[in-house]
Image 1 (tube, rainbow, N blue to C red):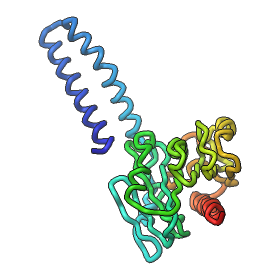
Image 2 (cartoon, rainbow, N blue to C red):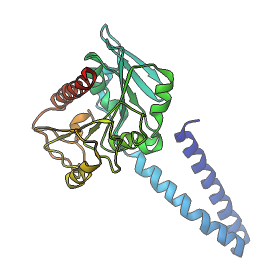
Image 3 (cartoon, one colour):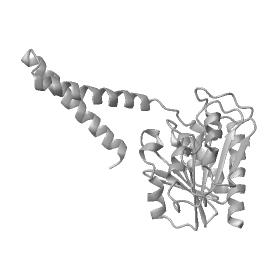
Image 4 (cartoon, one colour):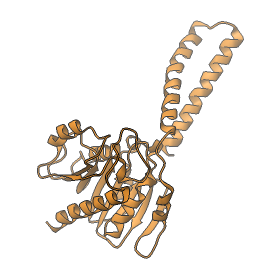
Length: 271
């Protein structure tokens, strides 16, 4: 059972109990001490869950144009599983698992994944519960259990990149990490090949925190800047609150990103 379904069940159960207690109190005309305690105890979590679900209900929708990247052709076969899309290109030995940004519809990253698959790296685009990577940080485990590759890389955008970094804190989980407009809040294994990419016009990334957290990256990690790129340009979901206007199109930013990723992975495989 998915975490989203479990969350919905818990929410409905809390609401039901909350309503029942309220009805009992109303019929009694007064609140017994025990019922007052129950009412107070339930009121906080019910309110918190309600506020949280309302918060997550509003998210950035993928541009309709991404649908064309979810259709198979002679170069890339696109498969859909309950928790991810699989972009199977010409490559055979290397795979990339991608965690989307928070509150962004995961298909917004289909163009980026499709382009990477066309360039020789098979990609898995993960669907996160409530569009927040924190709710399924170990989805990569399930993917790795079902597929066999010589090299495994994990990438993510914004919060998805931070969660991908958390997954890599355990040595041996991945061969490499690619963070898009993200940083690792904890030290990473020294042997982990790491690359961080961000746009020069990113208005959402906390650049001070980004620079502070560079100390958590393994020696020799690559820090790459896309001139004119912004925060939202890694996906196709329109403008993001707090971001700066980009000097290049989202398509151009994604093409540059794929080139940087392929160079990064290619350099590591040649070693």
